[in-house]
Length: 218
Image 1 (cartoon, rainbow, N blue to C red):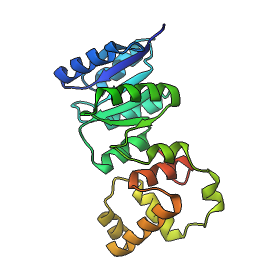
Image 2 (cartoon, helix red, strand yellow; image 1 turned 135 degrees about the vertical axis):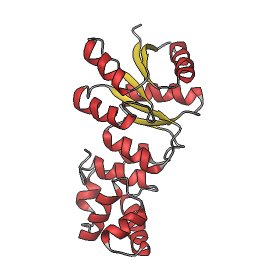
Image 3 (cartoon, one colour; image 1 turned 120 degrees about the vertical axis):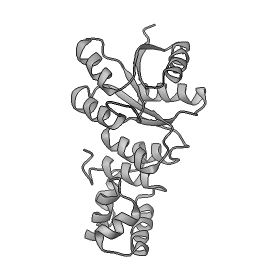
Image 4 (cartoon, rainbow, N blue to C red; image 1 turned 135 degrees about the horizontal axis):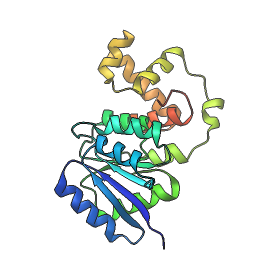
């Protein structure tokens, strides 16, 4: 049986080696190589004809971080499925990686069984998000009816402006300042859109907007 190839991009050697051992213990997967940052990865991908199926990408790395690396992969090797693997559980970080094209976001303290499931889900369905990162992401991406946006109420200009800003790394306080509105008004827009799009988190809102081409995913 042909195994799915995996590349690890992480500057912590001990963690990377442990992760490599775990991946290689799975019957369906094998690690091609490990690199310490995005710069080393881009060189490897340009030099080698062997393109991996999955890249496990850390975010906080020297030289070339995960965001910069994700941008390069999206432009130069878009066929590769990327799973972000980080200790950073901040909403802004997760949203940024999703908008850059990551197919999943995993926290480094997840159980091996969940990690194994994530690898298989990415191969089978092209996407995976654990419940801990966001409980409604899979429903947001794969469930629901695309016509909800077309057949639902038309968003007000202010709601659409808020939605676009919510799909950035700005905090709600910064969005309020940008729109010259009170935080309470911004909270009202947020809750209204959560209810309208049937999502429960800002991440779910962003993914819904990207999926339905309501905002630019770049």
